[in-house]
Image (cartoon, rainbow, N blue to C red; front, side):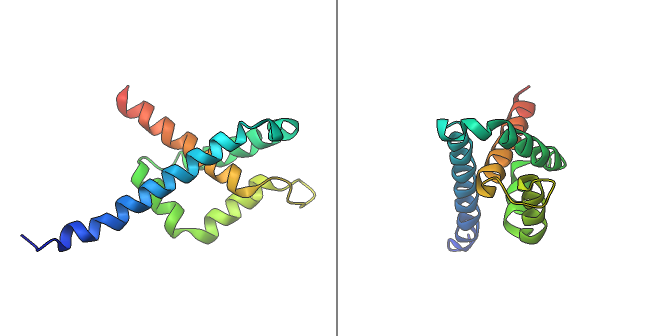
Length: 114
């Protein structure tokens, strides 16, 4: 009844969700690549640390919203997870970030169907 205005407003949101899910799943797949084998334990530690922080979000929509709107806070959390105790950045932030978000999505889906 709105001449398509309502569906036009929702389209970017669906597109944003789809883009985020694709990006996060790609990071998870990338982390499984053999090139990461030597540092896999460090990556897994960083992903778990960030994933733990993401458990405060109870829906995929909340995760996407946080990812889209909280740039500085998210950047700080990812940087902290990817940095050695001496302050040296060591891990690829986009891989850690994406894998953590993807794993949280999977947890949410598992909770929803349980």
